[in-house]
Length: 340
Image: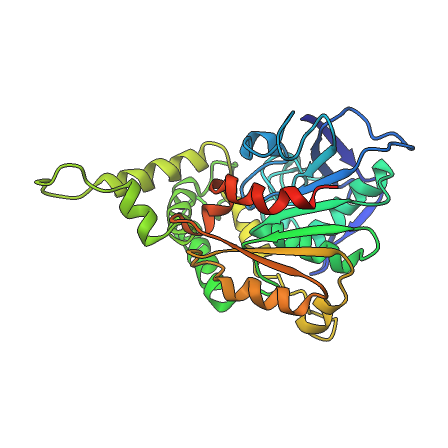
């Protein structure tokens, strides 16, 4: 997929207050250009928390030439979330007034802000309809919001392992991760983007526990030495994954994106979740994961029951929430019949 940048020639106002001029969104698509009279069907992928807009990179089993989301057959596009560390405007972006990153001077971001920013890219490209929108986790939040905000644009949508409103359970994880960031004394100093690095590693460790499952850890991190004095394989894995994220992401972007998750509420200002989901016109498929502790399947069943004509499917995984990135054969079996 090919990387592009869109810069908005105007002021972008945030739902929670504040604004910036010249908003930038990085996006990847399967071709250099979308032609005005392009006959290809459009597949829009909404990425998860710390992923980037190159869906072929983080979902290689499903995205690419000859794959389920065939980049030679369809116009496949993914836009980087507002607030991300991968090039779109956010706290790590350079504030032209100070010559330094925005840090905490950047406005707080909501899921609706992310969708409105990405919709600017759609409008810029001249795409009038999205034939299939797919999103998992916070990508699913975006897909749900987009379906409500632009009901005549989205024709089909797949929401995977997500919910229509943030739960206290999820907010508790988010706050724990933010507390880990704030416990690092370098985080609030805002001297450079390496601030909060140790806190970010700890936050990632917390996140991983919510993404995976009891069964998954016991399978992959089991101590092979029956006589070991101290079990350390799982601990080593947590530290490795923490460093792996801190090497590619910054603590400020992570803080902002975690905060945006807490804004997820499809019913805000719309008469409640039930009324909001009832307004969706797209042909919707909702997919739950039987071992997902972060978004238990009752959340997906609840959405499917309220969206007119929605279908519910459940996949089986030993790896919890992360099953949406791992159980590719099951996902293909559900999504392939939906392709335009």
